[in-house]
Image 1 (cartoon, one colour):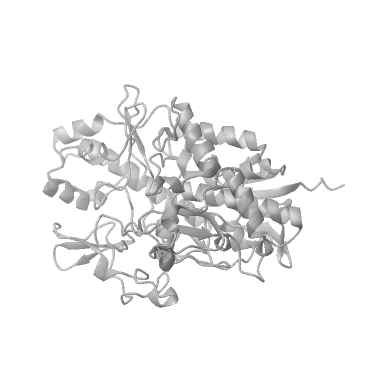
Image 2 (cartoon, helix red, strand yellow):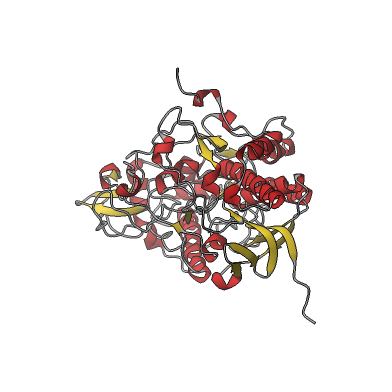
Length: 505
């Protein structure tokens, strides 16, 4: 006799913040969920190293269970009455596990979708994922493997400017960052100049990195020498350090983010050439898991090798190396990381696949004050934030960092805007029982503003409520009733409009 087939109300792919918030909303509607997590850990990047979270520029836009239960839960862990947006990874993971238990969600880690064979569909409906059957499915992963395997249309990289008439779309050499302090201006990770004309699309993705956590505590772990360590990779960084008069790691990281209880620090890109690794991310979004593991390994070698180089390379002054050795990896974080104790277990996938759904959010939705939507599920405001896509030489001494549309180290501004429900599901005529809150329907340019974890959490809440309504009515997600969705979202604190969104009389 064959074993019984698992049946759930909803299967969620990805124990990210979006997936957790979706599960919590489903529980409040009396529905069960199974979460299939492709890695070995829950909480996504907020438990995996991104511990200086980016709230919206209008703080009132962050609302619902995401604000009150997740970031509020982190505040509670530190004895604060208000949400906290700087925190330790272990605290974020603790809150994530508590909310998953509250949601009654069954979680299976290490469950990866490799392609269409792992997703059973019939007509316009998904039947099962990795052998787990459900009536509705939510793809809350950073990769979007569920939607892709189910045949939902998607894209990745950068659309051409002509696709949506977006001024910031495509290759942007005229808006690139330029630094003229290198001689020579070649060497890893600098690549060849792009062949595409300005405004043309490509398959390139902005730089990923590990959001590391450094410690000055007495029990800190020394920076390890990674396999494949090559000090020659950091020649351009060495030039940058010398010409800018940087005296140690303290000059690079301590201004970025001091974390509680006061002896831990968040790392990000920092210098023009730093912890980001432009060019290494391009194969990740649409790659196989085998190729993704190679991409991750390259980022591990780069990040760990850089820290080891800063602490040990004889080309740097001893005072610089001594300052660096005052830092180390935290002994109380990431104990079971596959990349070594104290090192983050999650690569920061800033942008992966993007669904082409019922509505595509574009630059035009970000830059028109009062541009309200008929079916909003949340409000958001954050700058158009693109890390460098590619580094290439120009002339004899200049390195170009192409990708950021501002041409500076600051983001292009965005207005306060709303994200409509139609960004969360496929176009009519497509799959009828799936919602996608992380790889949601947006252009590259729009994604640059909306790609922040607090927003993903709110979109996860909306995905949970869409699933609950679809299961209650038996209708396709495209046939949802917005008044019912809005009431369900607002019941648990979601904010769907703000005064600044109202058109000026």
